[in-house]
Length: 139
Image 1: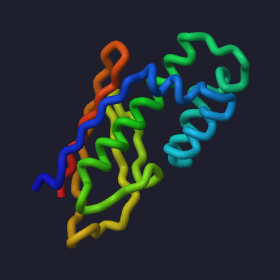
Image 2 (image 1 turned 90 degrees about the vertical axis):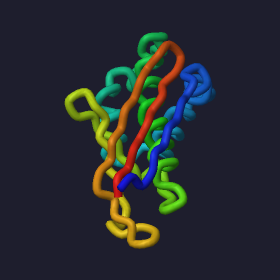
Image 3 (image 1 turned 30 degrees about the vertical axis):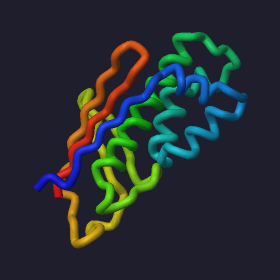
Image 4 (image 1 turned 180 degrees about the vertical axis):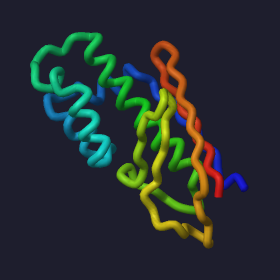
């Protein structure tokens, strides 16, 4: 049974403006939306970049794209689960397996009215200045 479908789209320039508004914006954003595992992966992936003051456009684009994918997948997951269950940023974890996103929802097995999540399906697409994500959740 399909529990829900969610979709989200994000405009990369808007996210970039948010992330680089102040020297602390990027850190504040990542600590708000990423789980501890995602934060470790983020710092591992971008450690050499984050430890320098060089804000090269390509580097910034890679960081923005990385975070846009996670943001849009988490938003789409929220939309797919609502109104049965309301998740927070930290309840949803995104991993990349064989090029495809894999979603883990850290919630009690029984949610809402005895609903059990059995599978999640996710797809992400990048096109120019946009990232779009779609999530389907089976119960």
